[in-house]
Image (cartoon, rainbow, N blue to C red; front, side, top):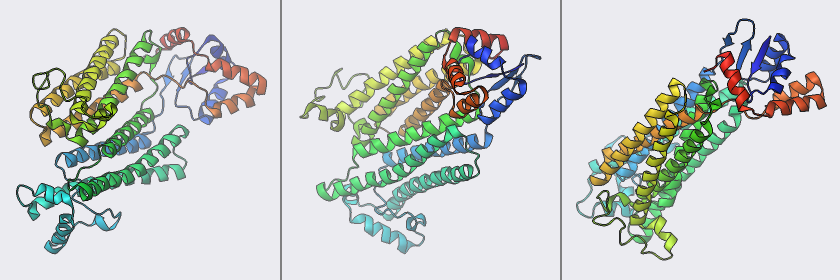
Length: 442
């Protein structure tokens, strides 16, 4: 008798319900509901392997990889203060860079009209060669961002029109597409803030609020694409049924939240150049708490506009993140997790401590470009490992898909079907653990 293993933890009531289906009916339900689950045969005790969606996963992983590259190049653009070198925003016309010397001189003359040029030329006059270096950096960032959008959008339209996009991917794909468009608009809105601030104050500075929003959306987009890439290539894990998994999952979520808050505060650090104040560790100069921590009125403004306060918050959020990562690792090491999950757990704590060390080194060396970029790369690596770790804690669907409900109601009737659907929705972890052990899912 074939039995469908999926949708939620299996209780005795669910087991008796599944046994009412013949081999043919069980397979038909699996196909019609598009369930990526295991089908267990009670005659030979073997599992038919879950079928991955390789094309979709390659597309999502490629998009996530290009988003991460765009974030890294964007970080270098900020570190080299190249973001205000392109003073225009034209979707198609600026795709062709200046070729001749005359073209470069024209771009340089436009740049000279803005205070960013005067600010950079306050000690020595900026040369055309120096302008080319920062212009190319901003150009690379913009072109890479547009290429990333195309790599995501073209396959998305193809898969959608051909009906190859799984139903559970449609909402995330629409969300990711919205984020791509928002990022494009927010990127120019951020650059515009630097050009406008220079016109008003003769000191060009990109808004730290817009910069942080730009960074946060990009990091969120990377996590979204990578998560659903994993869900398309790997089957649901049996780790979710292990006793004590709730505590590990809670700590993992808290670590992700803490990491996200640290990233947001890092955006304010970059926007205010807060890494260039108090280049000492662990103290702020000779104090644990700096004297100019809360000098602005109202007080809440210090957390967004005061470089000292922003750096203080960023440091302490980093300490909290390392503590939570350590707690997650200690709890995870005591659980009987599978090998892949253990490797991810060890990678998370290693990268977290490496990130903390790079952060301290970046601060002590007055934020060199190489170390700042490495700090950002390692941050993305932490997010990648945490997405994988959380994916390893996800079991089957908690709710019955709408397509499955329709099939069940059609087979057994409306009232009886609803009763059986409620049985499927009930999760009984103890029974699920015994059942997964019996059929050999590890």
